[in-house]
Each structure stands twice: as structure tokens, then as C-alpha cells.
Image (cartoon, rainbow, N blue to C red; front, side, top):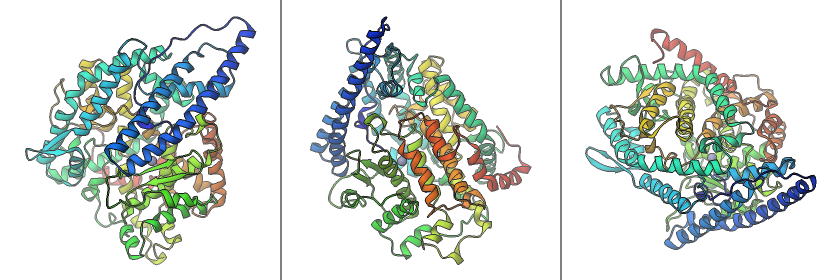
Amino acid sequence: MRNLIGRRTWRVVLAVVLMRSAPAFTQAAEDDAAKAAAFIAQAEKELAAHSVLASRAEWINVTYITDDTDAIAAEFGARGTELSVRFAKGAAKFDGVKGLSFDLRRKLDFLKQGIVLPAPDKPGAAQELNVIATRLQSQYGKGKGTLDGKPISGSDIEEAMGTMRDAEKLKEMWTSWHDQVGAPMRDDYARLVSIANEGAKELGYVDVGALWRSGYDMTADEFAREMDRLWAQVKPLYDQLHCYVRAKLNERYGAKVQPATGPIRADLLGNMWAQEWGNIYDLVAPKGVGDIGYDLTRLLVSKGYDPVKMVKAGEGFYTSLGLPALPATFWERSQLVKPRDREVVCHASAWDIDNKEDLRIKMCIKINADDFVTIHHELGHNYYQRAYNHQPYLYLNGAHDGFHEAIGDFIALSVTPEYLVQIGLLDAAKAPSADKDIGLLLRQAMDKVAFLPFGLLLDKWRWGVFSGSTKPGDYEAEWNALRLRYQGVVPPVARPATAFDPGAKYHIPGNTPYARYFLARILQFQFFKAAAEQAGWKGPLHRCSFYGNKAVGERLNKMLAMGASRPWPEALDAFTGSRKMDGSALIEYFRPLMTWLETQNKAHQCGW
Ligand SMILES: [Zn+2]
């Protein structure tokens, strides 16, 4: 997570002024350029000042939840909305102005793109949009399903879907959640789409989907094609994984529940949305090679790691690359453990309060493998934030919105057995031999590869909805068609046209763009491969550790330091030597698994 201007307010509201025609005379153009420069200077000044105070208010709120801190954070959120609306409106006035410098044009675009759901400039529209967006979110937050006929909360249902193996109970939880949470949102959602589309048109975009796709230094259509190209690169691996997992589920549940051919029943994959399958690793782990050979949680406990020592280890990864140590204030101000005496938000996040050096993480660290990996991930955000802290305010961001998550994940990928040996957590003699690789890779693929089609289709559905090619009457059918086409999954029961299953996934009622998560999954492997090459790694890619390699750190820092100041292909090039996103690194990383899966799947008819 990053803090720009009160991120909880991004999703709401905008009133807009229509663009005007370009000026006829050179003198007028110069005047306009001067006006644009003054406007941007003012915007950056006000936004920067607001962001520091708003971040402080939000930090206090999430680390000490009371009615008062809620109210203060909400107040700063509202001020942030007011600012972003005012500056997006102001930026749109310069749409017709020709000949602006690269930086001015880029910053004006960023101001317009800062609004996720724009409202049109007519009485009551902004308020109606705000009311609907808030209602959808709170419906999701309060949503419940049932288990054995009794109500069960969203977070409990997520956990239960991950651990239960009773097909009837899974079906009940899946169906009740989708019926009770998703279906009531449909009319609201259709209304939200139509209002926000009007707002997007006034900002100069054909619809909201085009506005969202405009943040990638290419046209909206080019970006949609780019997503398809990346998917085509990685799909063969997904197909093999799907085929293997389907066979295992068929063995486990029998053909009545999971047939040996065709799509997979969505509720059997250990996750409400079938988006990550790691929770059912125990069902698919092959005998003999399924055991990954060491238990990181146990190592952390037996070596006496506490939360501070775990974070020190994470910091040690970055300093080994030649990046500077974290500032003293990081250790004084971060929340590393759950306080005993108050309510806090435990969801891990990384902060840069003053946009300079006041870096922090907020976690409730437990001594286990997951949190060890998460620490490496969160510190990636902090090191990114710090590397670009010399940039002007509007460039304090990742190269595109997939970069920030990809950096954290790329470092987290580096928590390999080799690395654990290097930092003394794992004895070299006990490091898993190559025959354990399949288990390690399969475990990772169950989350990272399984996610890819879901990461792609969520916004594909939304783009169709915003463009009008998918009408409200087809919302449900189109969602299920995309799920079948890309993921090869089907609901456990037939879905009526009145259902609204997309609403049962947070990012739809929450109006959070999703393409970034797909891109981050692709990019992290591309970064990893670049680092391996720079480190002169000769072994299989997935075993690489570049811990301690200063040359990698230096090139990485070049990319990070650019922030959002240049089109992302330049940033990508600075680290990887390529201007194109590329799924082939992911394929190479999982190559041993791919070969193994193909052998396993020989007897099966893959596909659906
Ligand atoms: Zn993150």
C-alpha cells in the first residue's frame, strides 16, 4: 500500500468542466503554457502538504481505532477528495492546449487519472455516485454467507473455504455468499456505471474503462491487446496446472462432484473466487516430491527469531544489495506487533509518511514463514518510495501501477533455500536437494500461476460493462462466460440471470482497478530473471539468490529512482534491458514444473 492523497478517497466522485478549444495565436499558447505550469506548481504544493497531514491522520487511525480517530481520518479523506476533484477539473481545462512540455502534459494526465470514478457536472450526480459507492462497499463489508444454515462472516467464510474438504459444505458457503452479497448489488452497480461513464466522457475518455486503461503510456486499445499478449505467453502453463489439479480433485471427490473432463467446480479450489489455489496444496501434493524438505516457520522459531529480528533480516536483504539501511525512525515508529490494549488494522502495509524518509511498516507479525516473506515484500514498497523521494510530488509513484506490487513480490521470490542458507537460517547440509524442487514450484504455482486468468478477466468483465458491450441483463452471464473461458471454472450450481456474482468479489463493489495485479504477477518474474542474469546465475532460475550482489542493487535502484517520471518502458529498460513486459520469465522459472506436469497429464485429456 502507498499513500498519495488519502487513498481511501480515490474511489469517489468528481464534477467536471468541459474542455475548451485550442487558442489561435502563439502568444495565447505561451500564456496557456505558463498557466499550466503555475497550475501544476500549485497542485503539487497543495497535494504534498495535504498528503503529509492526511497520512499522519490515517496512520493514527489504523494503529489506534476509536470513534475519534475514525472521524479525523474521514475528515482528511473528505479534504483529499475535494482536492483531487478540484485539480482533476482544473487539469481537464488544459486538454485542448497544444505544445505543453512532456512533464506538464504528463502531470495533467496524472491529475485526471487520479479519479477512479468520475461524476458528471450536473446537480446531485456527485452525491448520488458517492452514496451508491459507499453503500456497495458497506454491503460487502457486512456481507454474510451460511454454513450448516447458520450465518458466517466474510473473513470466516474465506478461512473455512480454505480448510474444509466437504463438497456439500463448500457448495453451501459458495452459493450463500454469492446470493446474499452479490445479487442485491446489481441495480446499484448498473446505476453507478452509467453515472461514472458520463463523468469519464466529460474528462475526455470514452468510458470509465478507457480512463482506467489510459495510465499505461499507450492507448486504451493497445493496453487491452498487451494484456492479451501476456496472457497468451503464460496460458500453456496454466492449462497444464488446471489439468493436473482437476485430476486430483476428481480422485478426491469422485466424478459426481468433479468430473474428470471439462471445467473445475469453482468452490473446490480452496478460495471463494478460485483465484489462488495454495490452500488445497495438500490435496494435490504428489507423494515423495510433494514435501518441500524444510519448514521455514520451524527454523525461525528454533533460531530464536522475534519480530524485530525478522524485519532486520528483511532489511539485510536490501542492504546486501548496497541500498541504505532503514532510518532510525523506521524502528521507532513502525507497528511490528499487535498492541495488546487497542484495536488496530493488522493487514500488512508500507508507508512513507512525509514522502521523504519517514518510512514505516504496519503489521502484526507472527513468527512464521508467511510473515517472513511478507516483510520482504512490504520493505520493497519502502525502498521504492525512498528511491524516488527526490522526484516532484506527482511522480512519487511506481512506473505504472503494477510496478510497486511487483517489486515487493520480486524480492519475496528471493526467499529461496539458497538465501536461507546464506543468512544462516538453514544449514547447508539440510538444504533441499533438487528432487524437492517440484514440490516448491507446485506450491508456488498454485497461487501465482492459478491467479493469472482471474487477474485478467476481472477487468475484462468491467471494461465490457463500462463500454456498454455488456448490458445489465447480461452481467451475470458474461461473468460466467469469462470465468469459463479463461479460468476453466464453473459455479457449483446453475446461476440465475438475476444473480450478480461479480459483486461477491471485493474489488467490484470497492471499485479498485485490477489489471495491476495481473501485471505485477508477470513483472515480478521478469525482474527476477533480470537480477539472475546480472548476478551471473547459472543454475535453474527458480533457485537463484542474488543476495549480496551490489551490481543488481545498483541497476535496480536506477529503475526505482525514476518513480513515475518517465514512461514505464524506460523504467523497465533501466533494470531489465527490455522495454516490453514479458511473460517468458515466468515460464522459464516454472520450466521444471511444466515438464513434470506434462508427464503427469499424459493420460488425461487437458482443456475444458
Ligand atoms: Zn504490497
